[in-house]
Amino acid sequence: MLLKVGDLARRTGLTVRTLHHYDEIGLLKPSGRSEAGYRLYSQADVQRLHGIQTMRQMGLALSDIGALLAGDGMAPERIIGQQIRSLDQQIAQATELRGRLTMLRDGLMAGAEPDMGNWLEALALMTTYGKYFSSAELKHIFQNWNLIEADWLIVKDLVRSAMDRQLAPDTPEVQALAYRWMALMLHWMKGDLDLLERWGHMFRTEPSTQGRNHAPPGEMIEYIETAIKLRMALLEKYLSRNDLRTLGHVPHTDWAALEQDVQQLLARALAPHHPDAVAAALRWNDLFDTLTRRSPELRQKLLMASANEPLLQAGSPLSAPVRAYLQAALAHAMPAPAAAVVSPHR
Image 1 (cartoon, rainbow, N blue to C red):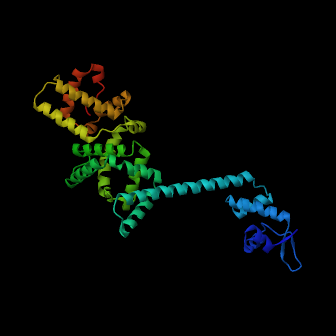
Image 2: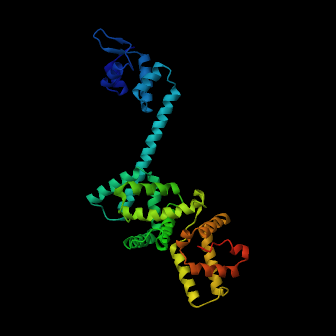
Image 3: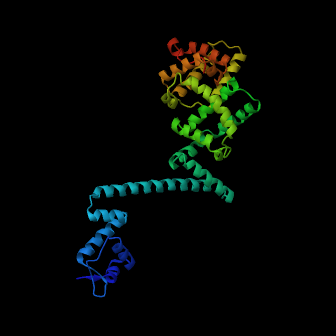
């Protein structure tokens, strides 16, 4: 039994035009022709068409189907492997798009409906961010922003003040700000140095990201990075990248509260062995444990770096008199070997 092209099209749900195209490209040639020149398809042709449509539903290109059916050496597993990779890519793209749409939806739900300017700005920024980060990374970054936002706004204003007063990057005040800036960035990125470096690179090279949504302007980035580079050059003499990833986060408010409390002890002229002084020293030790995640090795490295590098001492969140007083008090609170592992320059 032979079927005319119209009958085959009707019974398979395909169009006559599709069957003509398959014939023209050599994918499915009819076994015969009628006296009037109509294409006639045999049972073998129908079986071949079934194979073609099955592979089309799998997503194979017509050229790949033709090569596979021709048996020209292209292994079936190779074609299937190509399609699996293609599907993986489509899934990844769809997942990425879903992530970006989710962030956009969450942003809309969190605030007022944006106007056209907001839409255009958001689209431009997302395009720029997409050059450097996946949607999963951006979600991680944006969700963690609330961890540092309050302190970040304060630090940014303090850096602006230092810039306006034209303070040099190696002055104690600017070095203390560099310390806070570094600590906040590491906390924001959860110690992911690769993520942090890409974020910094994006802001250095993409002017459209600067000065938006609390982001610092380009001149501020350049100013504080100069101060940070001075610190990093010294720290890297003692700490590995893994050490930097390991560092915990101590909020600046904790350091500031300890500084204020010890200044009051000094004003009262309390001896280092006084119970209030010992209690303050133990608080200091606990903060240092948080900073080093209770790693004696990391604590010792920080001790050595701080003892040998005056610039690192200059950026300490605690003043020199407070550090000296706490060190003396800690000697009364802990045995000598334990007290010795706390840096006198933190």
